[in-house]
Figure 1 (cartoon, rainbow, N blue to C red):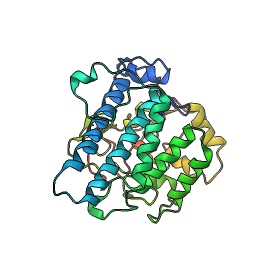
Figure 2: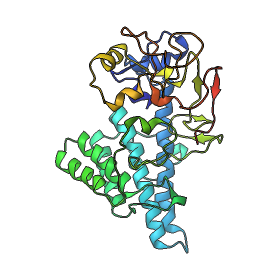
Figure 3: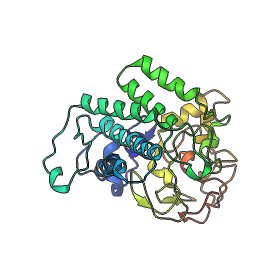
Figure 4: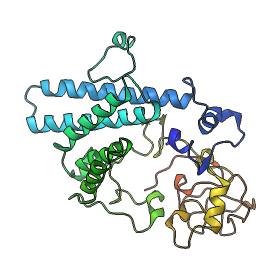
Length: 318
């Protein structure tokens, strides 16, 4: 999210605040090892890999554990290990490839493996996993890795390898899955904070409102695992402002009916930014023909929440 969105052409980080220099440096492709977000990304993914390696190595040794359940646990761990390595190899290229539990002292002598070896391990892990994982789980196991997760990621991996035939087949396996994946009729509903467990969702990060949760980036205390600064003059999405050229195109060039508009513009349902500075967030707050540099991405802002007083929001979206 951070290393990808910050560097994309449709958003801009250069809002002039030196407190967020690491984000600005990502946006400008000044990537250095001590950048907080690069460091967090590297460490968090390898923490995940170490945990996955422990599961893969130790679960088969548990006495009395049902063999089918043990195989599923190992398959889940392999899919997650592939996910963590995918995050790392797409960002860093050649990286250390670790497939066994490792002590701190052992980690001091690590060297980088060729990128091709990492991709091969990812493909092997996902192929192994998809042959074991179920298509769906019951409600009590929502968020667990499924066959659809493995196939969806495998499709992406094959695209990176320019293996288009296998990428298409893995994608079709998702499309035709008994899990019943479907696109949402209204694109903006994917970000409304209300439509939980969409049929479009393949892999969910399960978190609890008000509980300390840990994800790939940082530990925080709200649904998004990141503090949301809100209204009337700033919000979480302040970190990821749409490029003004992109917003201009939304106003003038994108055809009517394009569902992406609701994730950028400030219409009567989704607006949360007091553009005209009258102290009220209402239908008058629309993007002008020549937008300023402080437009927000609506998909990062909660809807149906009073944002007019200004504070840090960490409530439950429902």
